[in-house]
Image (cartoon, rainbow over all chains, first blue to last red; front, side, top):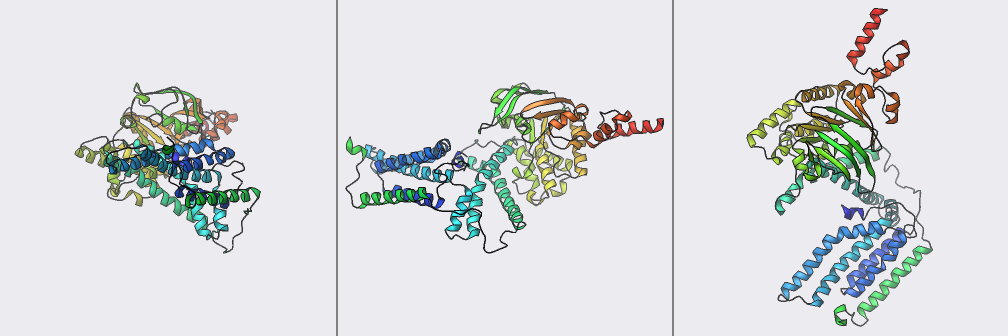
Amino acid sequence: MSVFDGLRFRKVSSPIHNLDPRIKFVYVIGIFVVAILFYQIIPLLILFFMQIPFVLLARVQRQWLRSLRGAAFLAIFIFVVNAGTTYFTSGYNLTAPNIENAAAMTLRFVVLVESFSVFFLTTSPDHLGLALEESRVPYEFAFAFTTAVRFVPVLAEEAQTIMDAQKARGLELEKGNLLKRIRNYVPVLIPLIVSAIRRSLELAEAMESRAWGATKKRTNLYLLTFRKGDYALLMITIAILTISVYIRFFGSAVPTITSFL
Amino acid sequence: MIEVQDIRYSYPNKVEALKGVSIKIEDGEFVAIMGQNGAGKSTLVKHFNGLLKPSQGKVLIDGVETTKSSVAALARNVGFVFQNPDHQLFSESVEEEIAFALKNFGFKPEIIEDRVTWALNLLSLTKYRKTSPFLLSGGERKRVALASVLAWNPSTLILDEPTIGQDHEQKEKLRQFIIQMQTQKKTVVTVTHDVEFVAECNPRVILMKEGKIVADGEGKEILTDPALLELSSIVLPQIAQIFSKLASLGFPKDVIDIYEAKAIILKVMEEC
């Protein structure tokens, strides 16, 4: 559940928390694009370290580290698969550039996780919903999205309770071969899905009894406005994108670490 | 026997839910753990079948430390019925739901058949044998959850809020059932807010507040102590309320049982 922990918003005030979510999202997408543009380890390392000032400014380092730890399993998997395939396809030969390449692919994934983690850690579901609405997303969809985000920690907690209840009835999740282990999760998944559906029906009734959708034109208590910090972040994003595109398509080849050795 | 030796427990989010708790529950005892929300009641009972392991101190079940045993092994002797039945029901029929734990514990098919029939009968669920548990009402689902634990006949039974959503008849059945468990020398521990239910059963009461035990004794003593109960935001049972208001007329204060109350009132009426 630690991956979810890394995405859970906590209300604190910091320069990063106060940024406009739309600009923050543009920034995250910018990082995303740059991470996809490069497959060499040096630019990806730069991207990775570039996020750290944001994390420190937002004072979410502990949760951020937890989300990285949560992603560790998948990261290792990506590394092994990448290194493994080149190993088998290049005639059982593991070279330094191959390892560097596998590391770069892993780092690309880590960069994506870390930037999304910063975004979700510093953006409240309310702001997110507001941002969607002001980006002309129909309110129904924006609401569904924010509700889904909001219920992730609730579901994670519920999953824990269900696992406890089934363990108390003698279920051993870690027993048996891989297939058996997957089957062991059936008694956990069914109650989780059923109770999520039941919860959503109850939520719908509760919302309707509070006049959800009574008027077509809703007003909002808070409105999003661009401030200095937002323009600054937008500039940074544009700068990163321009430089990256230039280097990638018009610059000389990006050096690799092994080429220095 | 359950022995809890000065345990402390902190959740991963650093909230300390238990701050030094020691209790001893003998075989065949009936104990009600009461206290306000967040007092640590559920955290404490989750230590009894090893779902939680103490950060400090020891929990011994029949002399075995819980840290040295798996939940599945402990669950064989300590049955735990969770508050919300929807957190465990998943089978296609009530029958299969009840058989689930029996299969996990490796009972033989013919014994499973017997135990399922017995448990269905005990909780008046026989007519729902082949029904999907999801089609049952809230109270019925709660009974299926209870039956699914009773089926393997654990020597200790932990009930988390067993009376929620049950009508009076079912509560009375539950009470009768607990009495029956006691005659079989089985331990019953219940976590509850239902003062009237506790007053009717008159068990040993353990009162908790902010991760500590504030009182431990007979139900009759604790449930008639207004100062103690106010501390844990519990109201006196109705009979105790009447008798405490009549105390100035010479009535005894420590009455929670309806039959005892009736006898006292009749005696006073005769004297008049």
